[in-house]
Image 1 (cartoon, rainbow, N blue to C red):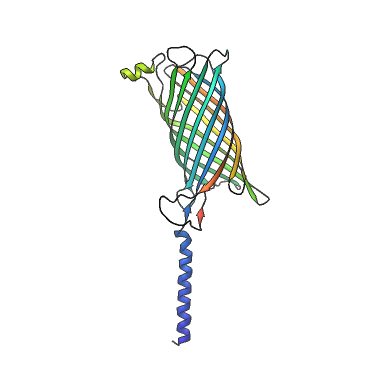
Image 2: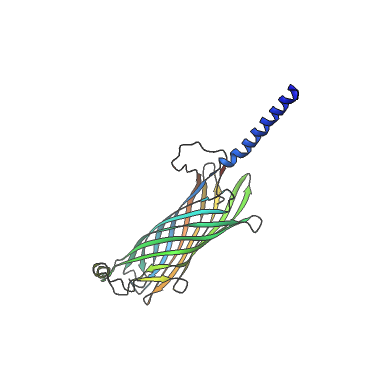
Length: 285
């Protein structure tokens, strides 16, 4: 083998090796971006609490919703999702003789499977697990003025979105839904005070298994995403319908909210000091 041929062979070998390393580098340096969406809402609320009163109440409420998600693997099929909601409101009865003030927190976490059965539309379906706690106070002069909505649930969750390119930007229409399937809930016996329950450990018939036979509801969001340079602005509607029954009492809460917020993508480094990768995979919201 002449020197010329040897040089050509060595040069070709290093070119192939360099190309192989370059092809492997993006795969090794992939980072999953987390998409975060923050929403603020003003709500019209209608509720009925069989423990506190025998008449319905209606009024206004405010809410804060924060959700985040990211793909678990590079194939962008399964994503991890989590949702946090804070809410507060004031309602009155039809005669305006009493009111119910409430404040609560809701948290859920789970996974969604992403698929595209129809051209242009994107679907996601999965389950989440969560818990919620809402404190209610009746301003009427009664013996038991407090009640607590507390439950843990497994939800069926899903979403559908459609992208519309307009002048080089992607505008998105999206709808999400969540409905409880199984869980447990805290509902005290009518007339039993919280003082008696917590002082004398009288929790009989206060914790109940919940499923579709005694608890049903849906949380539905529909909104439009409007892209800007640094973030995406979202505006839409949120509707909630929840009904459950236990201990010969019925409870329900209906809510319709106008929601406005924004979403951003960020990269979590998990405490490691390293530079951002060039090949980042963002969640297809």
